[in-house]
Length: 95
Image (cartoon, rainbow, N blue to C red; front, side, top):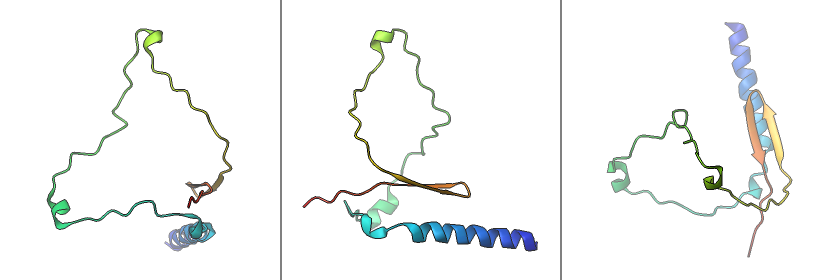
């Protein structure tokens, strides 16, 4: 009982430390979404279960989609503690 309580307290402290390590001033609001009462009444479709999805095999390799992406190297920080992973990338502000 005591070990479980200490474990939970340690996990909460780790989560608190991770949240405190984020520089929240590096983030920018890009859009604000306004919800109305009507939004609460709209029936939504069931969420997609990606575990049940399978890619369809492509018979002809020539028909396989290709994507050409020019990758730009970006410095990112990865914070990982107790199975939690945060990927932090710098924000570019225009204007």
